[in-house]
Length: 120
Image 1 (spheres, helix red, strand yellow):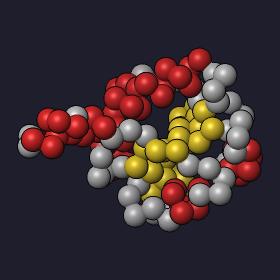
Image 2 (image 1 turned 120 degrees about the vertical axis):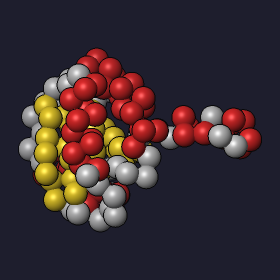
Image 3 (image 1 turned 30 degrees about the vertical axis):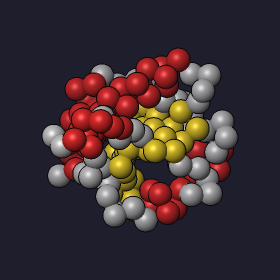
């Protein structure tokens, strides 16, 4: 680890990125990297737990998978597009196509397994 990483926390500064209805196509559908998209709401306690788990996983998958978040209370168009009925819901995209989905709060092992599969 170099001096810059020691001073600024290295990969620990990597965190999930926010997307919105306005930026969804560019951020997710046109992404060069596979994307894990967490659809969440600020009033949802399981969503907050999942958010913490994704902050922990983000540095491990930096450069392999983009981990993104979409607040469904502010971005209903994307939520309706994918028929999201409950949060948290996690969608997995590869080359602009949804390839997998998880509904509800999943254990860390399940998230890691799905991310590994997506990154392969």
